[in-house]
Every structure is written in structure tokens, then in C-alpha cells.
Length: 334
Ligand SMILES: [Zn+2]
Ligand SMILES: [Zn+2]
Image (cartoon, rainbow, N blue to C red; front, side, top):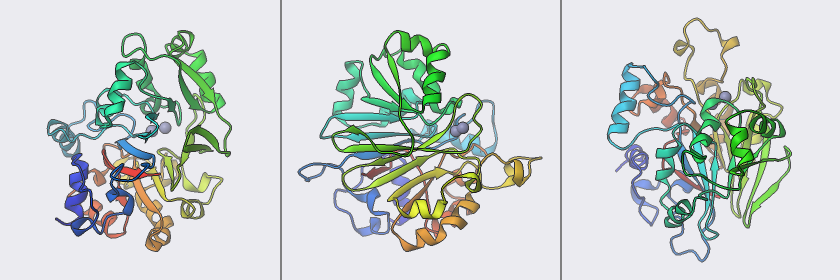
């Protein structure tokens, strides 16, 4: 089994061997570390629940070859969902959701910790929900956590003050707040917040089309490693942080990879593209990736993005340059 086959196996949600090595030796370390196998205390981990742009893959009414591939993947039980993470501390029986997407119903089924099903049966699956921003792919999944769905109670929603205001002052989210189902919990940006026994988080402001609220990326820090989840940004040049310097200081960075090229957006120029292109991101981070200390994982792929095709030349280039395309079921120890 070669590296790509191994990644594809992971893509299919296959269980990885308990002992790293063999054909998996070339994979990033965190992808092959067994979680909870034999260690006295398993580290918390981030678990990839979704990797597509807000409107999903396939997108509604889209019948391109790529979107038909998206349908085939779902038919095989290997579908891609809208970008999202779970952050799990198995020893503490703690479960956090990072962005609540329109695909939430199916994607949280990917969580294979037995304790999670118990928590769900008690109608309190999550210790908290982190929201990056108020675009449809990132928060509208909250809807099915209310009256008509699982009916959660007292679940903190960690976000910026503007996002908390947005939820508390717009229906149907405000109804969920009045019912005590969700509790908008604003957190200050750029400082560590402890959210669990062995888990801390920072909110980093990100420039993005902020029609309804503002936008952040989340940095999670466990006992061993740090991970950045940053699914949406307008342009790395508009960020207050230097991308390469910032990513160098992290162990894992899941970054906005919405588009491969301008060809996907007919009529747009590079100046009005709302996201960085994958090639630009790889150019900025090639030295970091070559040093081998940070895993750079590409996520939030638009339905037009040819990197969605695992057999295409774009994916081959990404692989060759040492970057990773995010896939449902990947886990990163923290
Ligand atoms: Zn988005
Ligand atoms: Zn957005």
C-alpha cells in the first residue's frame, strides 16, 4: 500500500493499524498515531468531520463531473461534508464541535467514540460548540439541535462578541437562546481560554466578508500539540499575521483551500477573488512544509475545485509538494 492508498483508506474512514510503519511510514506523524491505544492517558484529538465549502459537495443543482463524483462518494459511504471538526478528549468524555454545518446530521455519525452516543442519547452531545463566523456553512447546523431535532440544553456556543450578538438577536437562533438550548459565550480574541481539563483555545481574527458578524480562526492546544482551524479568509496579505511565521509556530494548520485557480470563477480577477488560491498558499508555506515540522492541511474546498479529484494532476502536485488535502475521518493528536 502506498502513501496515496493509505490516505484514500483514511478518506474512506478505515481504521488505521495500531502500529505506525510500513506503507504508512511516509504519512504525517499525527495521522498514524493510534488514539487511545495503550497510553495511560490518551491525548485529546481533532477529528475532521467535513472538508467542503459552505454549500457542500455536490452542490445543489450542480451536475459537473466533479459534483457527480461528489454524489458517487456519498453513494459509497465516503461522502465529503461541509468543513468542520470535532475536538475530543476521550479520557474526559468531552466533545466539542467546531462549526455547525448543514451536514451536521450525517457528519457527527463519523465520531466513533462510544461515549459520544451516550451523550447524544442524553441530548447533550457537546460540551461546547465553536463557531468561526455567520456564513451558512458554519453555523446553520445549529437549527437541528433545537426543538425539532435533538433538543440540546445549556450548550455553550463559543464565538466572538459580534457573533454572540448575531445569534441572540436573530431568529431562529434567538429562540434557541431564549429556550436555554444554546448559550452564546463570547471569548476575547488573541488570548488563551481553558475549555477543558487539557484543552485551551485562542480566537484569531481573520479578514473575511463579514456581512452579519466577524470571522475568526481557532487555535486548539492540548498537552502535546497545537492546531489551527482557519476555513475562510479573503486574502493572506490582508491578515494581521504573517502566514509563514504563524504556521511555523504550530504543529498542524487546516487552512482555507476553497479554490485552485481563477478558471473556477469565470469573469473574476485575482483582485476580487474572495479566497487565496491553493498555489498561492503552497508558495507561501513551501519552506515551512519542507522543514517537516508543521503539517499543512487544505480544507473548505469549493465544488469547482479540481483538487477534490483524488486522481487529478492538481492533487498529484499537492502531494508532491508535501501538502495534504483534508479528508473526513483524519485525526490529529493535540
Ligand atoms: Zn465558508
Ligand atoms: Zn465565509
